[in-house]
Length: 170
Image (tube, rainbow, N blue to C red):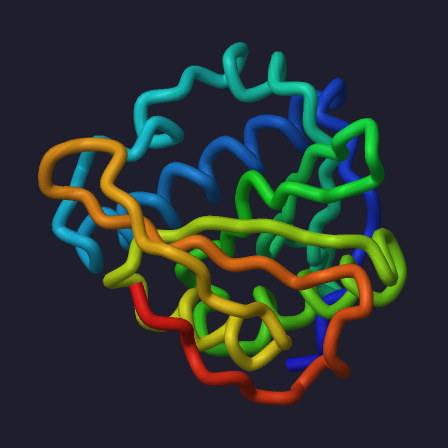
């Protein structure tokens, strides 16, 4: 399969918004299984609630026009970036879609800017991805009973993408 291409997503478009919402729910259902916690807020978020988020969105679109995954983020006034969600449609798992989206975002959308992200600590594929792309693991935290989250940051000076780092201790 040819590699998907990355493009901005307009959630004002009903078809695009519905696809993003479906992929998010499907991807978060898989993450819920991985981390043993089904209280992920995006699992219960309505389409209207998702669209109301003040986020910027890009998607990986297959050659046939199918949305394979997306990345959404928010920008702080100081220029820092917080990745809010990175989701891949289960049919596109293990095809490099998350890596493509994240590499694109780091190089093209917010190069040289500090980036932060969190994921379920037991979400091994996501943890490996962030570590492989130069993120440093910070302290784990527990926002709800039964849930441990891992925090990651990539400082302004950043490391070259693709360089592995060792996770910090928590």
